[in-house]
Amino acid sequence: MAAAKKAVLGPLVGAVDQGTSSTRFLVFNSKTAELLSHHQVEIKQEFPREGWVEQDPKEILHSVYECIEKTCEKLGQLNIDISNIKAIGVSNQRETTVVWDKLTGEPLYNAVAAPVSPGPSDPAAVVPSGSSVPAAGPSSVWLDLRTQSTVESLSKRIPGNNNFVKSKTGLPLSTYFSAVKLRWLLDNVRKVQKAVEEDRALFGTVDSWLIWSLTGGASGGVHCTDVTNASRTMLFNIHSLEWDKELCEFFEIPMKILPNVRSSSEIYGLMKISHSLKAGALEGVPISGCLGDQSAALVGQMCFHDGQAKNTYGTGCFLLCNTGRKCVFSEHGLLTTVAYKLGRDKPVYYALEGSVAIAGAVIRWLRDNLGIIKTSEEIEKLAKEVGTSYGCYFVPAFSGLYAPYWEPSARGIICGLTQFTNKCHIAFAALEAVCFQTREILDAMNRDCGIPLSHLQVDGGMTNNKILMQLQADILYIPVVKPSMPETTALGAAMAAGAAEGVGVWSLEPEDLSAVTMERFEPQINAEESEIRYSTWKKAVMKSMGWVTTQSSESGDPSIFCSLPLGFFIVSSMVMLIGARYRSGMP
Image 1 (cartoon, helix red, strand yellow):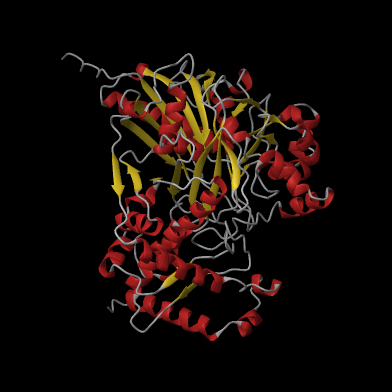
Image 2: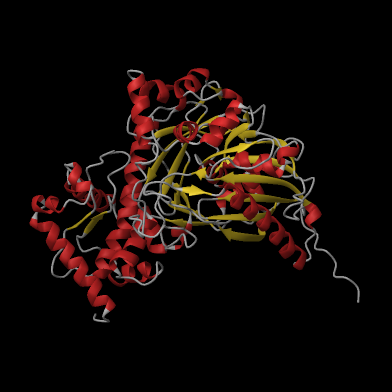
């Protein structure tokens, strides 16, 4: 019997999408942006202590190879010739810090990640027995307990050092970014110290570790990163686009361990066979695109013009607004970051970034902590039953308020309750909370940029919720635009790889993305109603502030409850009653 004829498509481009809870490899048709096949592998997060989050760099690397091999097998089953894959892009979780031995290729410690607690959407999360890490949502995104003392020490070293750091990097001095994690490793891990002394250590974010390993590792791997990932280390000068000597001296980081900084779209090296893993399906294919995950989504959404913005809805929300070729420093608590640089000779573009800490996490909280829904998907059904919050407002400030308030004393509240309020109204209020928080960030961006948004482009898992998307359009009072292609992060990495000089199989023109259509949500309420709801939300936000006033409140001291108002207990009791009625099957 004759072999099946291989399908003839346009040139193909692959993308590694490496995140905190999983790794994926996706293959796109470069002429239409159609997703042809993909494979996903979950990876573990380890929590050796509360507020510490780590991952195994070797597990991350193995997951990448596995995803590549499995995707190629699936393409073969579809009679698609994998020799047509002309380039590979990399998109990755940002800030996560890896140090490894350049002679052996072995990591010298686990990858140190951002301190986000494991949640039910991360089934592979590893929580040690007896850990006090809660079951849902970020608990200490603001405070990396491992590196907090490092930041406190640094903050005392130079008066006004926060401005010193921010003026060069666009970032505040914080436990969140890579420099502090690297400083902790140098101070506390003897294997890292010894390797630095013996000139064996290399540092990088996850993209650097992957590109070095995939291009040969200890046998000639390329040690590099791109401008978007470098801009999240707190060691990179976003004006000169170079590692900053003064910053490295301030953090006492030896510059010899840093990767070379390249553009987001150029050939870094060629894929090599991994003999130990018996993986080499794409040997010789250039790795030619690299973007931090949020920048990749911005590119995948085609936000190439000044004032265009995207919002990614996940556990939290990440909003990026392209500010063009000018560096805009926020006066409202937002971060200034590099958006992309799509070629060695291409200009750099910047972005303002704001984040909502609690988005999808609030839905998980309703499911796992209160039990008023059994699956995350039920939230849309409950909200649809009532179509209103009936004056109920939910401020999910579980670990303080983030941008634009930056108020650590705040805690979550549900207010505006009446005897008529039921679980459906609370579900609706939870969805509204995600939208109100997004509006606060976008309002801050508008004030900083001076360019009001004409529409918001969206992606992420929560965008499948049509009620959420309609609420977002109503609350912003501008259209919300959702692409039919949900994989915008991987798509952005693929676009950067395919457009690189020497590859040239992807045009970065909107009309060339024929497989991507848009779903548009227009505001369905009048502007006055939108403003009234938003102003009431802001009133609720003010009520959430000032709950944490002493150290005892954070350490679980029961005396704190003596100072809480009666309303706190009424709200808590009603919410628990609603959950109990639901679990018992009562209406």
